[in-house]
Amino acid sequence: VGRKGSSKEGYAVGDTTPEAKKRQMSTEVNIASTEYIGEPWTFLDCPGSVELIQDSLNALMVADTAIVVCEPDTARALTVAPILNFLDENDIPHILFINKMDTAISSVKETLESLQQHSRRPLILREVPIREDEHIIGHVDLVSERAFQWTPGQPSELIEIPGSVQNREEEARVELLESLADFDDTLLEELLEDIIPSSEEIYNSLSNDLKNSYIVPVFFGSAEQDNGIRRVLKALRHEAPEASATAQRLGIEADGGGTVAQVFKTVHAGHAGKMSFARVWRGEVADGMTLNGERVGGLQRVVGLKHDKVAKMLPGDIASLGRMDGVATGDTLTESGNGKDAGADWPDARSPLFALSIHAQHRDDEVKLSGALAKLSDEDPSISFGPDSDTGEFLMWGQGEMHLLVTIDRLEGKYGLSVTSQRPQVPYKETIRQTISQHARHKKQSGGHGEFGDVHLDIKPLPRGSGFQFNDVITGGVVPKQYIPAVKTGVKEFMVRGPLGFPVVDIGVTLTDGQFHAVDSSEMAFKKAAGQAMREGMPGCKPVLLEPIYQVHLVLPNEFTSKVQRLVSGRRGQILGFDAKPGWEGWDEVTVQLPQSEMHDL
Image (cartoon, rainbow, N blue to C red):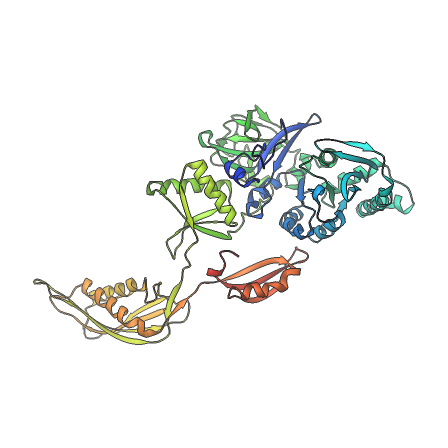
C-alpha cells in the first residue's frame, strides 16, 4: 500500500470501481496484500452496508480475525448487530474498533454498554482515553500501562500517564484482568492472592482468549487521522490466531496431507476471465496444477487494482486463481477433488428481500442481460433473477434497493448494458362471490360457411386456493364432444383478464346446455361463445379483487417491538405474534401479515 487513500476523494486503494466511487463507500470486498513491520498481511476490506453483506460473510469465513468498525453513537450500535451475530455463531475471532473518536457523540463507556447488548461475548476495553478540553487526544494501554498522545498522520508519542486519567486507568485495568480471569485459572489464582501478573502473562491470556472467541477486545481511535490504528495492528500482530488455527476452525487439519484451499470470492474480470480468490490451508498451490478437476490458469497477488503474478501459494496465503470455470465461492479445493470431506459447511446465500423489474433498453441485449446477471449472481449468490410467473416481468432480487442499484451500475459499467428498472407490478387477482347461469350464442354468416356456437354456463365461486374447475353435464349430444374442449379454452382465455382487469381464480364453470349447427359449428365458434358467456356473465357474479398478502418475519431489538403495531397497522397489516429470536439476546422476531403493495419501501 503505497499511500493512504480516501473514498471521499475517489483514490482509495480498494474502492476503485465506479459504483464504489459514486457512493463513496465499499460496495464489495477489496483485497490488499502488503507488509507491516516486515511481515506479510492481507486485508479484506468489507462493505459496511447490511445490503451488501453476502460478500462480507464469505470473506469473514477465511479471516483469522475480524475488525468490526463502529461509531461512538449509541443510537447506531444496533447497525453492527448482524455482523456480531454472524461472528458469534461461527466462532470467528474479532475485535471492535470504535472509530471517529475525534467527533464522538457518545462516550466510550456509553458506546460499549450499547454494543454489549448485541454481543454474546464480553467486550473487553484494552485502553482508556486521555481527554483535554473534552476532546480525546490519546490513550493509555491497559496491559503495558503506557500512555500515548495522538498526532494526526504520525505514530503516537509516548508520554507520562496524566494524573487525571490514573484512577480511571487503574479501575479499567482491574476490570480487564477480572474479565480475563474468567477464562484463565492461573490468572484467577494470582488475582486472588494479590499477585500482579506480568505483561507477558496478560498478553498470552489475551491471545488465547481471542483465538478461542472467549472475548472481544475493544480499541478506539480515528481512521481518518491515523489515530489508534498502529496500536490495533500491533495488537493483532501479537494476539491474532495463525492461519492453522483458522483452518482448524473450518474443520481442516493444517498438518494433514495434500493441498487444501478455500474459495471465498469470485470475480468475472472481462478478458481476464473468471478469477477465484482463495486461501491456502494446507500444502501449496502452484500455477498449472489441477484442483477439483480444474487447471489453475495463473496465480496473482492482489492489492486493489494491482495484480502481481506469483509462482505458488503457501499455507495462509491469499491470491486469485485464474480461469477455474467449474469452481464456485465456498468450494474447498483439493487435488483429489473431494473437497467436501476437507472443510466446514459454508454459509447459505442470503434469502432475497427486495425486487426490481428490469429490462434491457435495447431488445438485442436481452440475451446478453441474462448472461451478465448469471455472472453477477456467481459473484454474489444473494442476487437472483428470472421471470415472474404471474406478471411475466423479469425480476431481479437482492437484499435491498441499494444492493440492486449497485448491481444495475455493474451491468452498465462492466457489461455495457443500458438497463431500466421499476417497481414490480403487484400480481392482483380476482374471483367472484355469487353464482350465475349465463347463455351466449356466437353466430356469424359471411356468404360461405358461417360460425355458430351456443352455450349455457353455470359460473360459481370456489373456496380460496381451489384454482379453476371445468365440468360438463351435456346429454343428448346438444354440444358434440369434440367441441367441449374448445368451450373450456374459451373460458380459460377470458380468465386471463377478468372484469376488474386481473387474472380470475377459484371459480368453477359447468357447461350445462347448448346448440350446434351441422355445417356452421366449429371449435372456434364454441370458443368464442364461451368467451362471450364469461364476458357477459362475470360482472353479475359480484367480482372481488384479491390482494397478495405476505407473511413477514420482522427481526428487531425488543426496545422497538412496541412500535411495530403502528408500522404494521399503517400499512394495512396484522400482527400474528412475536417471540424472542433464538440466539439474538435482546431481539424479537415479530410475525405479521402485510399486503405486498405495502412492502416495497419497508
